[in-house]
Length: 106
Image 1 (cartoon, rainbow, N blue to C red):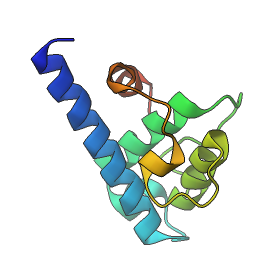
Image 2 (image 1 turned 120 degrees about the vertical axis):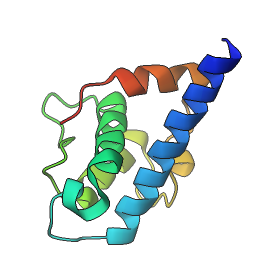
Image 3 (image 1 turned 90 degrees about the horizontal axis):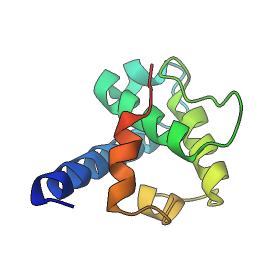
Image 4 (image 1 turned 180 degrees about the vertical axis):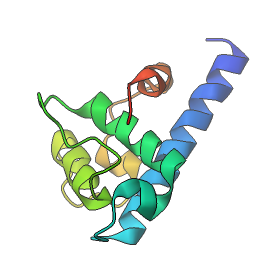
């Protein structure tokens, strides 16, 4: 992996981790995730949700509440009480972050 690709992967990972933390901070806010944490962060969270999900109709959508998306990520990763993204899903390497970023999100 080139230095530029590694930097981009790290940036994607950092943005996704920040989105997860922001989603935790808003808790069970009744607004949709895009309004609760901002569209860019919500899209990062949704991409990650889609990456880890094996569900045929996952709740990975910015119009859902952030808490629902976080619960789904935690459930898919087997860490129901994780407070950080690293605790939730530890199994992904740097090359995976490029694929996470290519996941469709809306």
